[in-house]
Image (cartoon, rainbow, N blue to C red):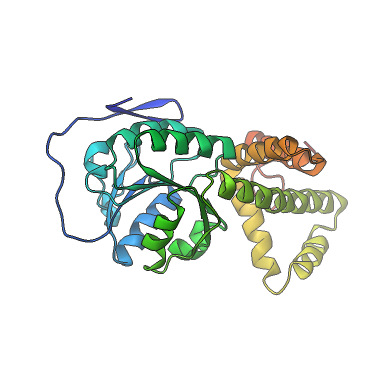
Length: 294
C-alpha cells in the first residue's frame, strides 16, 4: 500500500516527497527498524564504509550519529540494499510498503526471524516488482559481535547480498536461491538455543527451591565450557529481556517442526516457559518473578 508502512498492525505515516535524496557515490544501505539490532547494524555498516540511511517512526537515533530520515521514501531513495529489522510480526507488512518505494536495482534483505512461509511470501511480492530478495538468518545475538555476527542468506538476492556485505567484512554465507531456506535453518537452530535457555532456567528454579541454586549453577556452567558463567548470564538476561519476541520465534519453530513431521515435545515446553516468563518475569537470577512453576 503506497504511502504507508505498518509495524505490528500500527500504521507508519509517510509524507511523500517528489525529489529523491542524492549523495556520494558509494554503496547505500537502508536500515528499517532502529531497535537494538537495527542501531547496531546502522552504526556498524557506516563505520565499515557504507552510506547508511535509516527509518523508524517510533524512535529517534539521530543523537547516536545515525542518518535517520523522516519518511520511508526518503530513506529508500538510491538504496542498494534494504535491511529490514522490524521484527517478525511486522516484517510482511513493512515489506509490502517498502518494496513499492525501493529502487528496482536494490536488494531487499529481510533479517527478521520469520517463518519460511513468510519469507517466501515476501520474496514473491518482491519478484512481482522486479526486486531481488534475500532471506537472511542471523545466527547469534547481534549485541555480542555487531556486524560481524554470522549470517546465512537464501533467495534470488542472496548472492548479491553476499557480494555487498562480505567485501565490508560482514560474514554471510549463501545457501541457495530459495527464499525460506535460511529461515528454516534459523528455526531449527532456535529449537536448540531457546530450548537450552528454557532448560537452564527450569533447572536453576528447581535448584533455588531445593536450596542448591548456587551449586547447580556451577554445575551447569562447567558443562557449558570455559565461558560457562557468561553463557548462563546471557541465557538468563536474554530470555528475560526478549521473551515476547522469542515466544514468537519459538512458535514459528514449533510450527515448522510439526510441518516436517518431527516430534516437538521439548519445543512445546520451551514455548510454555516463554509465555509464562512474558507474563510473570524470570523466576531466577535475581529478576522479578515468582518461584511457581509455569
